[in-house]
Length: 166
Length: 166
Image (tube, rainbow over all chains, first blue to last red; front, side, top):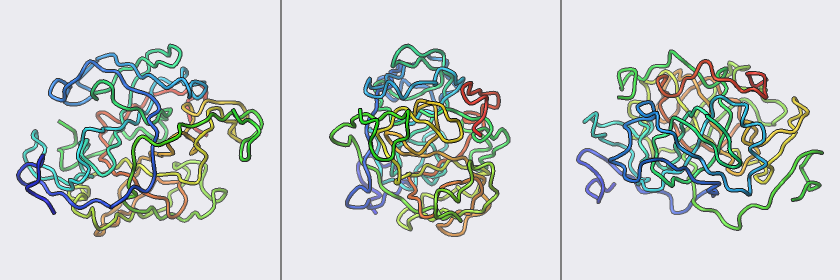
């Protein structure tokens, strides 16, 4: 436990992480957004209609075949500016203690974010999308087709957030 | 390119991967399912009402605070049995060539799967859920609350799959 460590707010709790990683990830591209500082970004992706660009490493160009037929995509990216050892957090906009796995905060053991985006167009290895709220130059991990049949649950509830992220 | 390499079907294309990883992940738990061989699993998660168990490493127990108030969760896990270098694939059930980023196949540069699950109950550091289709003992990467407001897109379309994963 290191509750007083740098970067932790009152009420937040950190744990000792394992000594080594179990697997490695490749950054397969970069995400370009209008936001260079965390305080400039939208509180969540639905608050912004900003058009963002996903630049995929040309190495993986062929892997984009068929992506243009998707109206929406799942985008996984790496939030590399965050601490990974915080298990209880006190988000500023809630003011109460929450478990990391009950939050979408970038601070988590594996700082992998998932956003659903609307695909506007594909331009070579660039995807023009709406629905991201990450910082400019965020590393890209994966792109997947969004299937309403398995991914959309319209009546899902998050009780401790009063049914929605604020 | 290594189109004839072991584990590649006719029409599939692999690329050379980068020489080293850009970041590391921790396995934060294990997923227990009824399936020990890929050929026994359901074709997709909606085909199965199987009850599965997510066992979180006790190190992260506090991070589960509040998770019990979620009706649905996003579960990220590591599909460690898959090749990572295939950019064009020929899934058996389609029979035609598709880009990796237009598929939910486990073979991808970063073999991170995302499933939406229904949370039945929390029992200490075990989560009992419905909606997974992975193999028994799959490494867990992350658990996130599912927000209908940002994650549910009921009218999303995947043209090249005729609107749904079969």
